[in-house]
Structures are given as structure tokens and as C-alpha cells.
Amino acid sequence: MELRDAVRLPANWTATADSLKDRVVLIVGAAGALGRASALACARMGANVVLLGRKVRALEKVYDEVEAIQTDAASIYPLDLAGATPQDYADLAATIEREFERLDGVVFAAAHVDGLQALSTTKPADWLSAMQVNVNAPFALIQACAELLARASGVEAASTQKSQSSVVFVLDDPARVGKAFWGAYGVGKFALMGLASILHEESESSPLRVHALLPAPMRSTLRRNAYFGENTVALPDATQAADAVVYLLGDAGAAARGKVLDLRENKPGE
Image: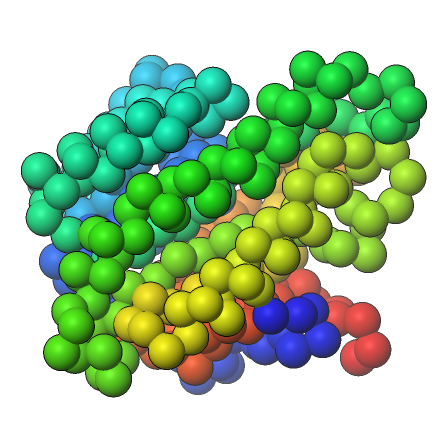
């Protein structure tokens, strides 16, 4: 999985009302711009969404919005990724198993960024906290939920698109975050690309699909914290990226397995 192998969202693709019918999707970072938009989009397409995030009140707002779309389609799971332990992730998997007996998709939309600063002035505690959210949490969560994701797929139906489960990792523009002052966030996004690539290689012959999503610039708190001097309010919301999440979680997304779905208007080299 490399950026040079990036693909586009098919121009003729549109989600249908039952694209994700009865599927269970875990949205990590559900109170953020992309997490919220993804939760709402998945609910509109028939999914049951598990909303994971740090702040209960913020999750409750998203919960209410999801319930307005589809009754009994949302659950809240508070978890602070910065301090989460392997046991916390095991407990999460056990709760999903108890409540749903399966897990069809994971959208890792959570990210930690404190703003731009030089590596030389970054406090070790801040570095470790950022890496915990941006890199360690995706690894630990997917590992804890691996059995559930495999169960959703079904061993005997491994060759069919409909039976596949999906994991979606959200990236950032590598041409930008690899430059000076992007610190732990920049390193974390490169590491996340590596995690997605290796996980794809190891699961390529299994029913578990691994995807990476590279959104276009969009209005969000994270964007405002990182891109100083930009009029973030003028950017579009996360609707386009959320639609792409639905595509990757659904049957049609099999065509983008192991690829980076690039939503930017101009890819390098075009």
C-alpha cells in the first residue's frame, strides 16, 4: 500500500439506503468532524454504529443525531485512547461481542495534534501521548478486535465481497506532514501508512479488507489546530470523506482493497 498506487472514488458510484444494512461499524474518534459525519452516513445506509471517543457529552450529541436517522442504531463507548491499555481494548472487544456478536467495520478517524513545533522542543510526554493515539491505538484496537472482524466475514464465505469486513485508516497529506515542525503527528501518519500496508499484506488472502483514506482539506478542529493562517471555516465539511468511508465499508469498496483512496482534487503527478 503506497501513495503511488492511490485510487479515486468511482465517478458513477452512489450509496444505496441498504449499502451497510445490519452491519456493525466501530467509529473511533466519533465526536470529531470526520468521525461524526461517518457515523451519520453509515447510519443512513443501515449500519449500527458504535461511537468511541474521549468525551461523553460530545458522543451523546452524535448519538442523538444518529438516533434521529435510525432508532436503536447507535451505542456509545467512552475511551481515552491516550491512556488506554491492552486490557481496555480487550474489554471493548468483549463488549461488542456481547452486544452484537460481530464487527463488520472499523473507521479510525481519531488523531492527536498539538500544533506545529520543532522536534527539539517537543516534550517527551507530549510525543508519547501523540504516538499512543496516532499509532499504538490503531494497532492495539485492531489486534483486540481481529477475531470479531473475522467472525463477521465468515470462514466459508471468504471469497465473496459481501462477507468481507473492512478497516479504514485515515491519512494526511504526506507531502506536507513530512516536513519540518510536524512532529509526532507527522511521524504518526507515516507510521499509520506503514501499519496499514503491513496489515494489508498479512490479511490479503483473508476476508478482512484494509483501506487507507486520504481526504481533501476539510473543516475540522484538527485542521484548525495544525494549519495556522488558513481560513478553515471556508473549507467544505466532512461529507465527501464520509461518503468515501461508506464506499470503503461496503461491497463496492473491495475494488480499493489495499489501496489509498485519494480524495484530493490534484494528486501529485497529475
